[in-house]
Length: 232
Length: 232
Image 1 (cartoon, chains in turn brown, green):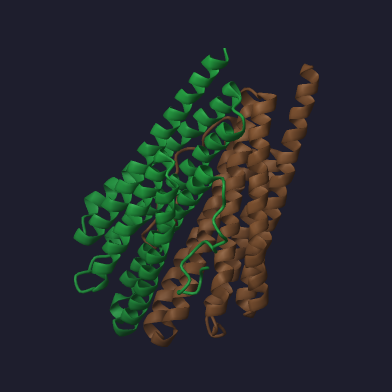
Image 2 (cartoon, chains in turn red, orange; image 1 turned 30 degrees about the horizontal axis):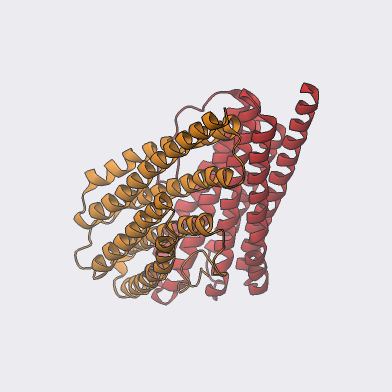
């Protein structure tokens, strides 16, 4: 009987991990496609990202249902319970990452002219780093790999540095090109969305680190990038 | 035995409602104080908002622990289980509302000059409406009041209209006053944060409406305000 319950619990956990891996893959694609759509000014690809987002939401609901069912039926204790709750929280964060990708995609039709912007090199690079952070954070979760989680956390500074540089570049650009202020404002929000994706990947990595080691990281301020002044 | 469990469950639910009411009160104060700090350029009040935010996070963690404990020990079914899960989700949303208040407060020190901005009348009005939405959404939750929830949902359009008007006003202002571009950009983020608070209050109201009536609202697009082009 106990063995049966343990086996059933392990199967639940495997299902949860599978669902979260699928969510993570979709959230990554969402960011990647949104950035490609932005660079290529591909409105159809941008619409596709928006259309795909409800699938991530539906997966999160599946995770929620399975978590409730697992707690109610298997009555997991201590470590097992922590793992189930961590899965629920991580699913919530991944859903938000997907939302940020969707938000970027929604701005694509508004950024008509982007050829001349030097930051059209910086933004995709920033997006790629944030995407890798999401990827590695979820791999760290799947493999319970504290070192990989730590590497994700350390990379958040790089994303913040990109954000600060892009923020200043855009503001200077706005001063010099008043006609481009509207498009620049949209790009400011795009940069902010990527910066938030980095923060959320970091949150996932922190949860993985705690679950794997039982230790909290030394206190670090979280939240938005510091240099536009609104963060840390 | 059954009666004992039912009573214990009711006590758990009461505790959950109490915790969420406290979270809601704190999230409202966070927004209100952040807006006051912005208008009065009161950096100390802004810092206070940032310092108070961890209390909201701690309350959310209390909600999570109590939800897990309730599901594990009381094994609630059907409606009861839905109510517990709704409490968990609403706590998550209220925590995010608190974060947006904190993010507004963090920008206060960067908005040095604001006397001349006409939108220093619009922004507080927008903030007040969003704050009332949060307040009413949580009252609707406490009273299981579907009508009040519906009223919150309908007010989201007002917040979106404010956001769109402020977005356009700020962009025009930036074109005409290049020296104020940096401060205007920060105000743009402030407006976006308030708009997101309205969205989240709406999310809570939608959950309350569903929990109270068992019916989903007719399909409406959610998310960011439409007119800056990034939404709906």
